[in-house]
Image (cartoon, rainbow, N blue to C red; front, side, top):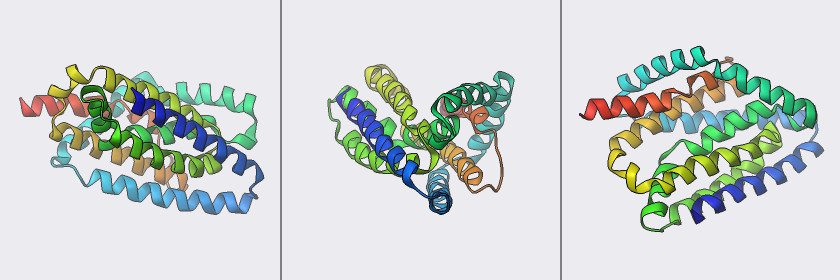
Length: 226
């Protein structure tokens, strides 16, 4: 798990630097950086979503996942925890819930996280995760400088998600074909686009309620292949 551990610390370090920057930034700079970041996140999401080889599956996953998420009311639960943490940390550190969900999706959804974790677990080759750590550490500075301290909590998501993939790599790999990884990436890309729309104040979406779609797309891909 050395690759995941390095990745986790990179996110924590980058987030710490970003929070320090945030407390010293004037509001007009924060607003401009947020808009720039929203545009960049949107481009990342579009690029990921266009990788799909079967977009009908992505749509079905989002619909079914959204229904499950609404039933579980995930957004409200995360918002409740985020509000409590925000009250304790203070508004100057940003909305904790938004920072956590946004950064967690960006860092955990994608081929580098999945393939890198599997390679680290099976071959002990953490090269992909080391490269990802550099990218995540740098982006964490920017995310935390605009979204606040909640970005640092995404390190927990990185540790649990990538760590689980690494430890269970031998069991999981036979089921994670390139097709499944592609559709997971594409579905995650749509969720990341929704984050960009929220960051740009274009449309408010209950993003966390769509998270089950990531699990749903794996199940549908396995059925489709079978």
